[in-house]
Length: 180
Image 1 (cartoon, rainbow, N blue to C red):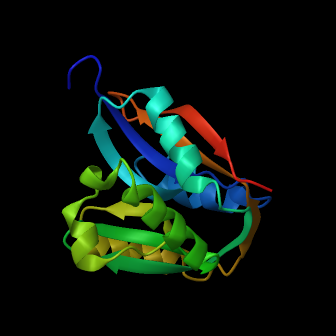
Image 2: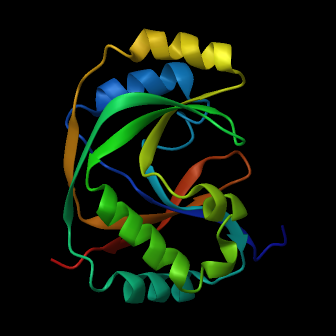
């Protein structure tokens, strides 16, 4: 990466009242729990030299018609695929809005940064709460948390761009409010 190139990701950072439940699970099972707050990814990590101003202008243009929306997460599910072994907190309400945001953001200046695997497997809105090296570890963690039936709800009213530094730490660079 040259000095102008930044690694970024575009996300929703929900501030649930009961987020401590998610935090506790992530502390045990998500290696990135100390680097980035609980989030829902809209645009997956990409490296570019797009300026902050250009990216912010693009986001504002892409999101100008998007109104705040209700989001409810619940049900912990196991996922294993070519990318890895994960525990996801699935989206129960608001999934179609997240897919709409995801598509809008990848439709503009970020089109060339869309990972190939997204075109093959599709996009499933979720919050990652665990990341594992093998299926056994995934299954053991799932047994530990599968009885958690809490719901997590919030009104989503802004989208954030983070810079991912060399330590994998998240630094918020841009926040765009959704139009009321």
